[in-house]
Image (cartoon, rainbow, N blue to C red; front, side, top):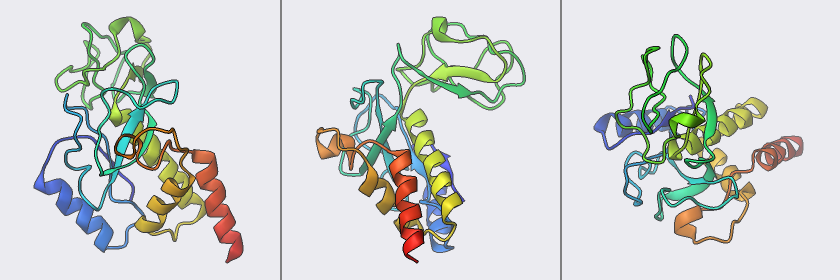
Length: 205
């Protein structure tokens, strides 16, 4: 199981994360992004069972809003207000946005996505493409989703990878950005190198 979580502290999250890990699920537990207006790492990213993910901008720099702390394992593209991430949206119709904040939330209707809890670096309404099922936003939520996707690729190559294996590979192949460890962790996610590493290890077996 691979899941991405972007929320505050909850006993439910740690229970799910511990359960996934103890059952040997093919997952790191949860990729956790957070945008709470506070840069310190919060839960669920602080749990040992999760991968803490920070965010970078289009130039590969750690963003001002990104989390910082010893729990940051690596960083991935999260975008900025002027250069947001294009993503699918869980809407049932065309996306219409008013105001400056965008939240990709399940159940949002055609009259506009719910802006409650939206990232403070959220995309400006002028950035939104009014196309069904697509929109733009920025934040560590988007960064965490990138990591989750790469984890799925790794498990596709070798389904027997353990959560510890996954984290080790992601960190080993991450690109050093030359920023403090508490900001970048092991560095920037490198999907191609991570997949190559898994393939190389499989060929050894």
